[in-house]
Image 1: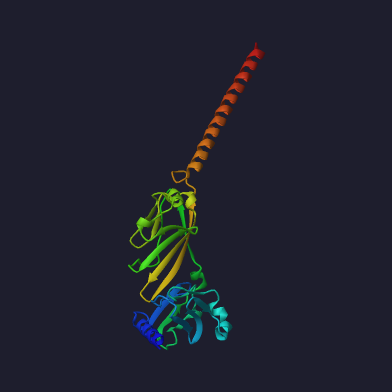
Image 2 (image 1 turned 90 degrees about the vertical axis):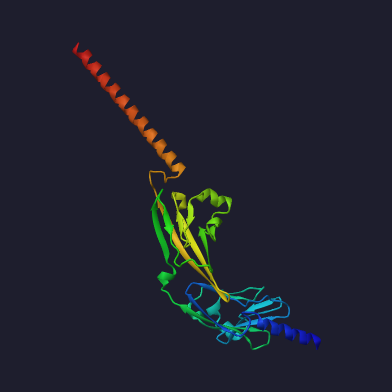
Amino acid sequence: MLKKFIFSLLVAFLFLVPGASDGTDEVSVKEGDSVTLYTNIIINQGVRIKWYYDGIFIARISGDQSNICTDVQCNEDTERFRDRLKLDHQTGSLTIMNITTEHKGDYHLKFSSSSSGKRFIVSVHGVSAAERDEVKRKIVKGGEAVTLETPVEKKTNNSLTWYFNDTLIVSGDQSQICTDAQCKERFRDRLKLDSFGSLTITNTRDTDTGEYKLQINISTGSFSIRRNTSFSVTVTADPGSGRSPGARAGICVGVVLLLVFALGFTIYHMNSRSDIKRKLQNEVL
């Protein structure tokens, strides 16, 4: 009896924790975003949680066990959530990845056997296939600067992360640019962030050509949204300082060879004319 009483007190306390009591949060996202719905608790052996979508069970955690879409109704609708749901094993928070308009609706979090919990009303704004898969393209002449603009204004609850060909180059602010040796070697002192989080690459080189991805995380106390924007940067050839050292060396070698060839041809031509002139003089004599 004492154990049951203590457990009941524990469950009651959990419902007094901010975010764990009854309440409804409205979440507005765009197609292609990923959204995480927070429980705002830490899972322990005495807590069981369940997630429902429009009344259909979709996920649960009980102790160290977790399941996603194990009942018949959820399995019959498995295409809706296939490879899209993720549970945090420490908190029980639910992430819906690469969300679509099919996933809008009522997400209900329940604790243990109680009917209390928390609701999230998720609305998803549709976008065209072209907009969803859009890659912003930038073409810049070598040696010039190029700026990749953020689609949203940077705020205190936003965090920005930049990748180049899936390699992390910026995490957070100006002080977190190229923290590893390989990145420093490639972009040394050439990456700048403005107050909005837009990225500028100065003195561009042909090695800067590639795919740049911006990951935006918008976080509140109850949920977070992750949004990706992609850029394709092409650096065109330029005879100036924008060329790589190897390219400039190749140009110099080519110019020298051309000059040597021209000089050799001129000398040969002059010698040939001299030979013809002497031959004519001998014939006259």
